[in-house]
Length: 121
Image (cartoon, rainbow, N blue to C red; front, side, top):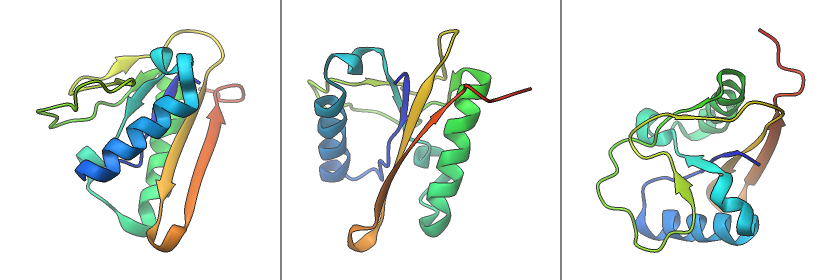
């Protein structure tokens, strides 16, 4: 896993909890997984958020460029994840996989894993 698009709605408790869950889930692999949150650029699109974020995750793999999480002023100290803060980040060459998280009201939650294996120009 080289890229993760977080649900991240810019709430202190929610974002902190998700960041800790990402670090816990990925373990040592968290060091090489670039995390972004495109809601920082789009706002929360509610029912359309998951579709747009899945598209953005696929495009990040296709272009090998992770979009930034913008407007970050203060990161929580001690976060054990690698966030693309205010600047896009390049992904390595080769086969890649990424995940995007979408968490809905009332417990409708989904994580989608995508790879660049069958992406073409």
